[in-house]
Structures are given as structure tokens and as C-alpha cells.
Image (cartoon, rainbow, N blue to C red; front, side, top):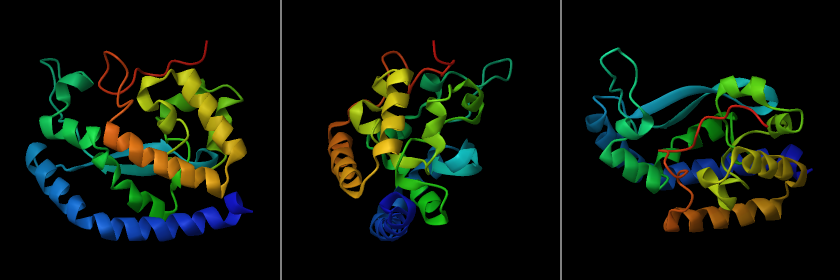
Amino acid sequence: MYKTYFKRLLDFSAALIGFIILSPIFLVVMIALFFANQGKPFFFQTRPGKNEMLFKIIKFKTMNDKKDKDGNLLADGERLTSIGAFVRKTSLDEIPQLLNVLKGDMSLIGPRPLLVQYLLLYNETQKQRHNIRPGITGWAQINGRNAISWNQKFEYDVWYVNNCTFLLDIKILFLTVKKVFVSEGISQEGEATMEVFKGSN
């Protein structure tokens, strides 16, 4: 009952209140990134949502668009700006996704929406992560975020899909706040975020 009906109602209400409260921070970060990224404070990308339906995710843009001599984008670590690193470390880059929650593309809590090209790489169990709306934060995020392996991340995602309750969502919200303050699991060792998923072994 909660997962089917009440979760969406709570998502909308909490996202609306959260966006109103965070709007001053939203504006400050937007202006700072406008100047840091040559007039491009936002990052838009197509991601798969519930039942693998595609939508446009919106985040603050933490990396510039610098390219090498051949016109290829530089590595993530080389394009991560100073203010972008701060915004990512403090998870402020996630604030615009509240708009995705209001639209119904996402939930506050659920498996993180990943890249479209990964859809063909999931096994049958991993595909279950798309049985509910993706989230801004989730069970995998409070259990390691980007510092854990892909297989661990997907195990946490599928577990959450099969065990989603109101009390679990409250627990994840509180633990997410803790993770933000201690800045844990932001990236894998040697990566700006996380290595590319190449399929399960």
C-alpha cells in the first residue's frame, strides 16, 4: 500500500517543501555555477526511470566542457571545477532533482537513475531496480555510495525494491543527512565519481 500509493504523495509534499526551503541555496549555487561554467549552471541527461521509461534528469553542472586537441572531452577529474567539487562534496548538486520528484520522474528515495547504455548490461535480477521510481538517495547511497562495487550497489538497490517501507525511507533520509555532513563515499579511489559499469562478471 505504501509503495503503491502513499510514497508518491509524500514525495510530492516533501519535495515541494524542501525546494521552497532550499530555494535561497539553489539560487546562490546556480549563480556561482553560471559564471564557473560559461553560462551553463545545469546538467541535463536522459536516464531510465520506473519501468525503464526515459526522462531528463536535472542536476547542477559540476564539470566544465573542456576538450583535448582532438575535440574529445577530457577525463572527469580534469573537468571537475573547484566550485563543482565543493557542490558535489556537499551534495548540493542533487537539489535540482527535487524538480524531477515534483514532475513524477523520480522519488526522494530509490535506486539512483544510471546511464541509458547500462540497460543492456543488467542481468535479470539487476533489472528489478527499475520496478520503482529512481531516487535522489537510496539504500546503496547510505551503504557506500560511489565507494562500493557495482555488484554491491545493485544488490542494495534490488533489496530496497523488495523491502520498501515508510520506516525504511525515514531511516534512509536521516542516514543520508549524516552521510552528507561527513562526506563519505563520494567517489571510488582513483575516480572523480565511479568507474564505468561494464556488466556483471
